[in-house]
Image 1 (cartoon, rainbow, N blue to C red):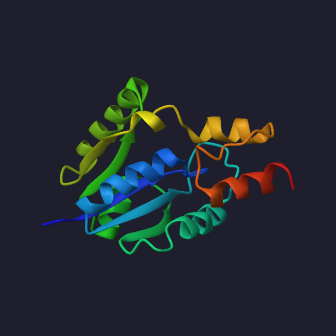
Image 2: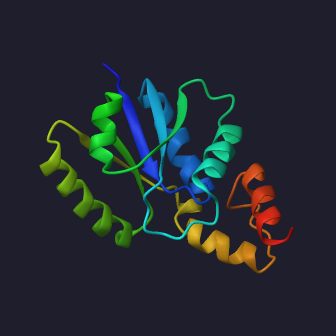
Length: 160
């Protein structure tokens, strides 16, 4: 039986790396809920509402994708949504260390929920939302790192 996967993150902004993980995971699950974390410790460029709107535009024709936001622990959100899978992407060894520690804590908190890791494609292993924002802030194009809708939103934010 396939299940519902929750793909949590700040998605500030969504990158082609995120998109690659979702595209590859999509056939494996009945539904993927892209869950925008509203309690992130990171200082956000886009509000939660803006991120949800942008994600909605990117995934408007994807039948099995749902966009939502949450506050609190990912495992609590998964339980609320009936999901037994947390979807995460890994770019490099540094991601692995961080994600592995979180997955161990999640397993302690909710043993019935599994973390499903997908390795980033080589083409996207260097992309991060932080780097994309920094490059865009300085007026340089990030068209190869983000979907067009996101690129336009970055231009409007940084260069109105």
